[in-house]
Length: 174
Image 1 (cartoon, rainbow, N blue to C red):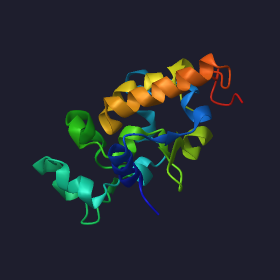
Image 2: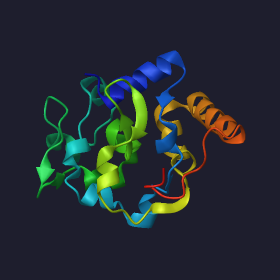
Image 3: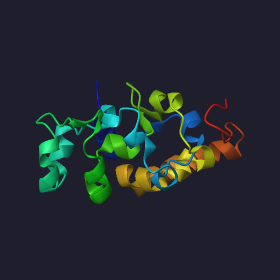
């Protein structure tokens, strides 16, 4: 099974990403300024904190954080939470792809969707602000690049204009 990092690399090579309309049109302003990083601080975020070996080689991990990552790319825990949290705040370039994409992730067949985990845990950002594809613009561009992001936006806006999809008012709207 491919991991998120590998799907991102595949999307970059192909110049496009497959995504779930219902997930990306939900209103969820995933912004750490709004929630102060609740997903990272709570809910056992260590599940998402792992580097793909290839990704790990491309990161300039600060010396003081090196011992927090094992040889497989798995990040160690501190009291049940990701030990990198304080370093990610200080050195944003080291944030793993899985964390940068959260609350989005890939299904086993490579479709970018809102992770089930995100649906199950309360978040102060649910139902607020803009749809995910707009509120996560910065992160989606960082991960996929401007061309792929613009393709996502154009496709969604074409579908909305044609009346085939609607923007979701909240996380649980159908």
